[in-house]
Length: 589
Image (cartoon, rainbow, N blue to C red; front, side, top):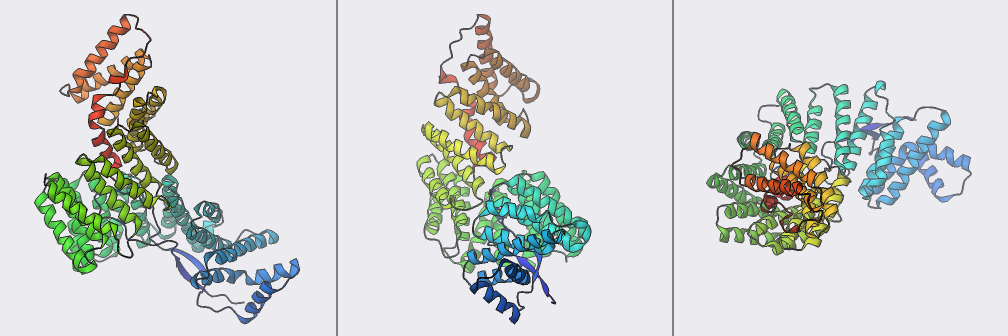
């Protein structure tokens, strides 16, 4: 029987535009953007009449197992079409899931009975089965299905096998991302990119699209150096294959600007954004130009060029209001940026007014507004309330944001960031038990999501240790400070302010536990760092020097093993700067 095939672009989830306009990095879930191509039966090809009759018999009669197997093998090539048609008809994914499971099981059984290697038919059925599991939110069940699918293709057998392998790795990476397992997700994307390069060559435009996709993943994982290298590669490919100032190049430059901004290279970020804006203006993409204007405003604000920032924001606001309406979330996001700007310049009345306008829009969102957009806006507004010493109001907004996201797949890292910020504010108002619980929940999510080696994770561990100190849980605090020290030394180096703060906290904890020798060793190391590399002008230098002298004096007197009072256990430097350091490392979601 002759079979017709066509290329099908599978999209398993909604496909929002990447958020390149926000001034803050959101560890949002990565959803498929580039099509992953699979060979499937032509969806426009009707089911032949004899097969329709067989299918009707299969559904209505009780048959012998031998006859059942014979009929099922004939129907195998069309079960996937039935699965797709079932979903399209609105009958629901459960019936489609049944068709997909039957198809994959049958293809697997046929290969075993014939003693042959599984065919690409099996791969195709497993991909569709995994997609249906994902559409049902059953991501854990999709993982083993897709892991089985990537083991079947033999890349030495030609382009079809390479295509199946690429598609499988990218789909598996998307699924891991929805589970919050960022490291595994990036690993799958990298393997998919390698297969694509080996099959198509390094300079193929499709390789450029995958490079940008992987770069976005690295940005969200805060691997900015790797993201920058991939962005450069993408720009080179698109410049070679596209017209000057193309839409593809503009998208590449917006992503590159985001990377440069994250690395503190604001001038380079501004240059990329201006070039991207010119390309969009030439293409008459007014809304995209407005979105880039918001990003330009963010850069101007980082450079303290506030008048130019206001001008960029107002330009974007005018376009968004005229094209999307006064109550669109894009309008609210510009209000939030203006509120932040006026707060920084001391115009608190104007800042509060813009916050209220944004909250009014988020309270009654227009159709089509995503919960992620609302939650992101609420967390940014909460940061402004936190800055003006209104932690209770900020906590209310963060609780609303967390409730919006708690049932959404792939939001573990975002929720962890919100919980960590809530922990900081609970600590500020003296609610130490609640602070510790928030930090503990955030730490658990970050360990699961693969962020356990990031500097952000180290800062959260340090904050949780401080909460434990206030609750007199000294042993637990010691373990947390030690883990934080190891992470921050690796990620930031020993001279970074966050790392030195952890050193001082750990020394105080060792002293409280009676481990005077360990405390002396750490303080001597910190003083040596200040004298040789950081300078002694820092006001903390004299404090640390006097603390060390006291410890040495007590140790020389055969120190009493009774633990010291906890009043001075926490490093005053940590108490003063914890808010600043946590913002820098990602608490501003």
